[in-house]
Image (cartoon, rainbow, N blue to C red):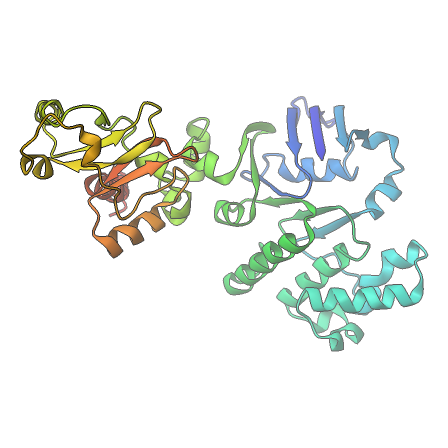
Length: 378
């Protein structure tokens, strides 16, 4: 874990700090994306982690150890570092570029060779590239080599400074996908700098948004899109960006949180009165602990001759229900498959958490078009 604790950075020729009292935690085994406009301080924060830029005040610790207690050369050699221009040495072959740090660490030659082969396979490059020079490779191939070199010593921490920003969209998408796949396999602590919110949302476990050296908000992509801290974050994220990732829209976000319910013991007569008073044609039946027991419709009650019997005797479990964390894509698939007009939301304890209706789904889906029209984008 990397911890920033009240970190400032000020340059001698500037009266204003470029990094101002930043406190943030970058969890181990996750991808944390630092994002913001040009000049916000994201690259400065990244370079302070490996001491390429000196902290003015405050502390940065790695697993509790102050980075200032470490030899800077040793610190950097034990971190992977990938930058936009790859940073490959043009006079060295691809093999020499990948193996330079392991050789400086005096690792065994056969182990270095084996590791290089593994790395080339890992980043999807043929070993025939090892004897070529950087000028003989495309931009996408060079970035793959840069990633391979960053992983050469199997470091726990990888720093990536806008590594894909200069690439064409197709290659950039491919490398983003490959990075996500690698992270699932290796669980490294990756700090990734970008100015592209789409990229951040796609790859990040955690996003830290900076503005003029200040950490404005940090959290999961889902949390930030749903609950931006202020107008700056809201504008930076984009009000309709949540629709680019509909899997972040959960049942809990769109359900009716207090639907009409009736206890199992309530008579059919009183249940019918309850439904008339609320102008509904169905009711959700629950037990004393609010466990969901089923749905009863008005038409089912009208067929009964004994209206003194408990409503629980008529309760029928629906064909489909949802969990609070189920996303809207799954809900739409259920509605399409079953034509269900009502979808109860049931939590892990089998308690009724809420209700999704076909009309609430339509309202949610139509809201994105209303927002687009309000923004003048229609």
